Image 1 (cartoon, rainbow over the protein chains, first blue to last red):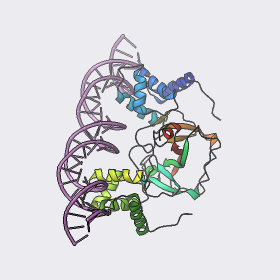
Image 2: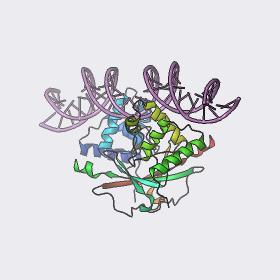
Image 3: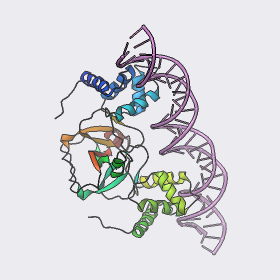
Image 4: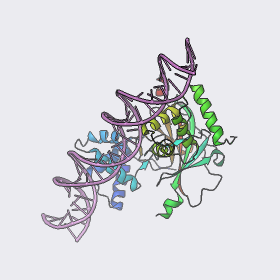
Length: 148
Length: 148
DNA sequence: TGACAAAGGATAATTATTATTATTCAATAG
DNA sequence: CTATTGAATAATAATAATTATCCTTTGTCA
């Protein structure tokens, strides 16, 4: 079970992880991370930029992108939009799920019958109309693993 | 249980659905759909364009994009990369899942405890190193539903 | 404190996608 | 079977998202 951490605690943890990783604890990085840690809305780089600008008006969008990349590479941050690079299409309208290589972005089908049924135990937020459920199994494919 | 259809059958079905929907059965559309229906690799628009060009060298990339949009709007095709518009980030590294509005792309957290455990009944393809599993519950949020 | 590597800011370049417009084609009314 | 018309296509311009480059500034550690 996860323990709830205050924002202050999570900032301290972040600073510590940066030290461990040899990443400089710059003011910009702290503010960028704070913007991310303060919300559950899963913001875009642009939205983070807007938020950070309130505190550091001179920040550049490139710095935000660069640090997002640095943080995700270091495992300090995660990408919700795993397949966001480009539109990926599916002519198979039947229920099924997907296996995705996070390196090369290859997508393989996983028949629905191979996955235990996914069910929500709690009701959804008021008025949300659920249409379907898509499971992504994320990892590294054999080829990419072989190539280090 | 889904019945397996031959490519020919799926092309016939597609032509019929186009007629029903009032969509012109152009040569370009047939070839674009064939490219999609012939693979399970979930290609990008660019990849489809390259494939279609073999048969119709004069095809334009815009036509491919436009028809992909037409097909997905009509429900003839599905987008695997639901959140591909822009990078979306998550500072919460604990296990959890997401509820996504397919209209406005709002993302809400779903604690792991609210979802039945997801398990694969069959082994993964040789050498695939599974890292994690992400469930996307897709639908329309209250606000977007209210706005038609 | 000072040297040096790392990071930031400005901006150019690239990639992915959408919009615009003139031309061509598919559907169907006669 | 042909003429008409609205939809679809091709070419191209425009925009949005992201990455790379280059030079300046700032942390870090001796």
